[in-house]
Image (tube, rainbow, N blue to C red; front, side, top):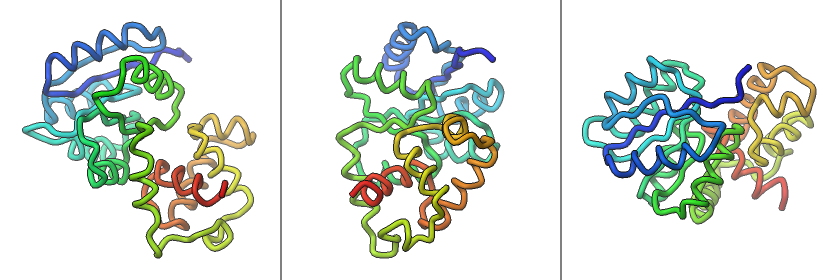
Length: 214
């Protein structure tokens, strides 16, 4: 299997797309296979090319990033989606993660920090701008959420998997570490999310940092 990751950029700002394309050229693991200036065009492109990674703007005129993301998830594509946006609004962050985003980065990040985050994304890890993690943590402090692994009824295997999710490992890497099939990991993750009343693995990762390591 090739280690090259195919990437699509969907953003309505031409200069930003050009800058991201130049950054991607510095990472041998990435190959840019398409660009789109709007959500409708971007969703069609992703469904056609099925890239490994999508770098997606949040606010676009015809179809916003959340709409594109929901379309991708509805199509059951395996494409990892990282939002790249100017919005540091907590509601936008939570909405993106609950719609199935695999990361959330701010456009004003320093180029080196953006490169580091993209390299992490290439390995299947969750990426989120450091300054935004407190917003996610605040959103997950609701009284309805279980406050411990035992209160959530997590099994020992589920806790082991959750610890690795919080470390940013993909299902494939978790399966390798625990010597179980990737499909088995997916089933466990589904059970973990249901027990924690969460909607995404990123939310689960943030919950784990606050409740498994405290």
